[in-house]
Length: 337
Image (tube, rainbow, N blue to C red; front, top):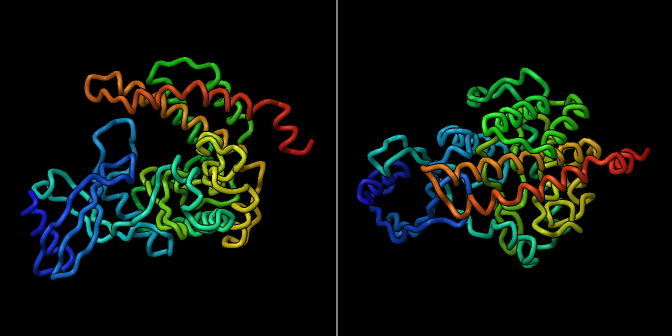
């Protein structure tokens, strides 16, 4: 297999002498199965990432080639992503289709990122930088011809997301009153977005890479779509993705104002804090529904997994966050009335 892969790699990058020096699982990525490898190419060592679809029905999203196309678009617009190099759809090379990407050194683990302040440089600057990076993503607006696989928005993004989560809960045949309350609350409080842009849909701590100096890449584009850009700010600030650092409301790494400032400076638009907090509730609902999906996947015959089983146990904690965030007194404080 490595021999076939070496031949494909030589054609993909134009090398004449290829020798694979190291091939091992990558620490980055939870949705796809990633490997990092070091190759000697015409006497020069180079490091790459192989990205393949993870064999599970839980993480339904874009195909491997669609995500590769997304990375190409983001890279062309100056977003900090692993540079997309080539795509292979020949199953004889590595068993299934895969993407070849530039390898990015650093740490992406959410718990490590919030605890190790040596990562990312100055945290205030980092929070602003992440806001700026998100604003770059939101500069990409429809139509984009190579993103024709995206569904065109036919209803407000919040309504689409609420319907999707309701459909999943119906299929799971699970009755969770706190989630039903959260869905009804988000439905009743939804507003139409001022603009539709590309949204990452999973922009949070744990889905970007840091080294000692700062941000090196934004990962996990599997759920990207056309949508309300404020939804990405809500995902980043959601309490469920702060990894215990609730004093730092922007992803557990900085203040909300620092993150907002970075976004405003890059986008030229003021952040609607009430809208962000609305989308934080939606982010909590997404997290809870995903945890329930993981639990069902673990109980299936096809993919028993300790990791899935453990992740499924957080549903009750997320439900508590939803109830607290949607309490009438909370929203009186948010709206200042």
